[in-house]
Image (cartoon, rainbow over all chains, first blue to last red; front, side):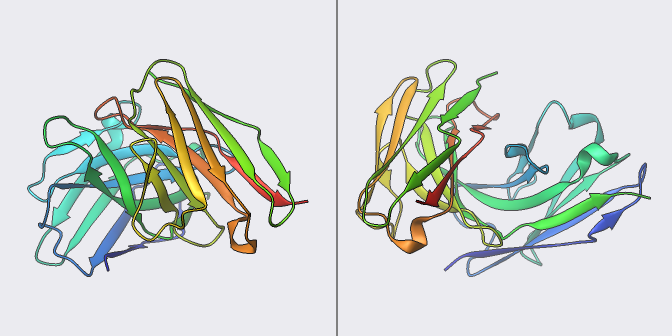
Amino acid sequence: QVQLQESGPGLVKPSQTLSLTCTVSGDPISSGDHYWSWIRQPPGKRLEWIGYISYRGMTFYNPSLKSRLTLSVDTSKNQFSLNLTSVTAADTAVYFCARARSASPYFYFYYMDVWGKGTAVTVSS
Amino acid sequence: EIVMTQSPATLSVSPGERATLSCRASQSVSNNLAWYQQIPGQAPRLLIYGASTRATGIPARFSGSGSGTEFTLTITSLQSEDFALYYCQQYNTWPLPAFGQGTKVEIK
C-alpha cells in the first residue's frame, strides 16, 4: 500500500524559502505512469494545485506560482520536494503531496489517487 | 480556467439517510471528474474518478453520476464515518486541475 508523508518546517519567515519533502513508501517512485504532485489549502479556502513532477524530473507548475516554484525528485530516496521562494502570508496553508494517476493511456487525464495527511505551514515573522 | 462550484456548502443529514452533493463546472469537463473525502487530520481519500467509478476499497453506498458540467455524489445510508468534507475536482484540463470549495456533511 502506497503511503505519502510530508515533512518540513511549520513556520517560515516572510521573504524566505519554503522547503517541503514528500517521502513515498510502499512503491518505487519510478514505477507506473504517475506524476507526483503538491496541493495546498489556505485557511478557509479551497484546495489549490501547485505542481506536478515525474520521476524523470519533468515538471508542470501552476502559472500563479511558477516564478517562485521549483519541484525536484530524488528517486534514490523515493522522495520529491518543493521549494517556494519569497514567501508571504498568502502562502500560509496546509500543504499536501499526492500521487497523480493516469486515467487514460491516450490523453493527459490524471487524478490524485493517494494523498499524504498534509503539513501546516505558517508564514510569519 | 475552469471553476468548480459545489452545493450546498453544508448538508445536515441523519445517520442512515441519503446525502446528495452537487458539483458544477463552468465549462464541460467530460467525465474527468473525481470526488474526495477529507476528515480533518487525515489524508484526503479518493472516492470516485471518471465521474462514476468507485476507487479501490470504497463502499458501494458511495456513487457518482453526471458528465459535462453537472455532477452528483450520492451517499446512501450515511454511516458515522461518512460525516466529513467532500471535494470535487476536474482533471480535464492538463496540467491545471481545479477543485470545488467543498461540501461539509454534518450530523443532523
